[in-house]
Image 1 (tube, rainbow, N blue to C red):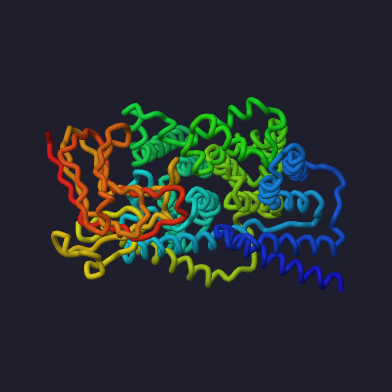
Image 2 (cartoon, helix red, strand yellow):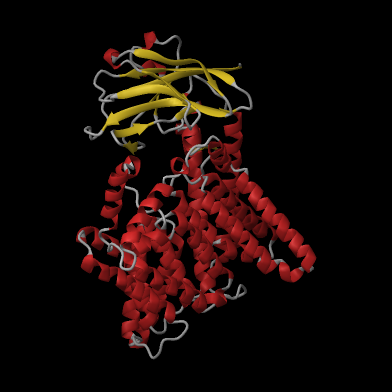
Length: 593
């Protein structure tokens, strides 16, 4: 009877694990992890598989992982904000569970190739959903609202997700598996499909505008070249290919619009801290760490310590937006001191030693998460904890790494899904790129100039439309979903127009604005600036609410790059925006001086 029960549990465990692998990119399905671990604990208990004879190389990572998590829990002893500390402990529970299962649960093994196959098709669904959503946004609701990412005017194919870094991590992690599938695939159409999906995944990472993801992508590609190309060609030829690849990667990175914008602003002497708020958060974190280096602030007090530092140093933007450290290495030292950081490094080293026979997969984990830790506190969010837990778990427990290993699989259905998704996604991407290039500026169509989500309002539904010079549609703006915090409240400041020129020019720019009489907006204006220190504005006269006003800037001088847009502000005492704010008919003219 026990044998039948354990066999059934093993089958259920395998199904749930495949579901977890498939859904790892969807935070809404994180509960599947707990279902899987619950079944695993039950199975090991029935099999009487609990126990540990000695600490082997394979068991060492679990020991250090448990010590790291337990030390974080111990820091609650000297923390004041226990509520926040317990909330942070919740983020560590997945790591705690796999540490216990791995260390004491004998007999747990998985087939790496099978699990990665389901992971790949889950990721394929993500790619498909992202592109369908972007197409919908582009063609039906907005045009530029899905295109602007911090100065990068291109279609952001990851705009459906809350944070592009975390979904980008999952995309990059499948690269080694997908490349192996391409190499081993014998059918031409399937090989082409997988190549196209790989390239499309890389383009999605590029479109996100995240430079750390692009650096990770380049590093992974170079390692894969070293692994697969070096043994097959002459050493001199390989180094030539490798050098060209490095040069190509650096060229792509340096010519990326966000990188170019950064260099341009630096050339205008804009402070680094104004380019990236992380520098401010890191500086504050380092000052706190210097006062409590060994034990840290405790898991519960790190947030309040950062907020107090922001107040003391006058960093109002960081305070109002409640920014954490945005660096996992510093976050660990801040919370649990050098003791916690030492245990974390021991885990990383033992993880590499315990799973290094998985080769490129372990290296990819270290590259992608290692770089991501530089700019994000990954372990402070479920978006980062669950994917990392997944990869630690499968690489330490997997029993099979051979690319040629077989497992029961419905290959015909998967092949149909692969081909269909490839054709659908590539067709939509091509249509979006073509549409975005062909769609030209039209002052009567908000889709062609407004770079934030809005409500499209047709001319017949506009208030006091007789005050407008001609028939036009407009956009209705809401602060509530897309605002940014600042010292006096919240604001929204979408750019309507931006360009880069090599000579001094004169800009004339204006836009029609309407604010309803019941609106609680305290300020609305049009602006033009060079993103550093040259700025002009023209404000809406709030004493004349309920009328259309033309906000204009005439003959303003700029050189190099500049942008023009609109901004609305809401004071902090108001919980939400009331009334209506419309913008319509932007106009701009540029002439050489």
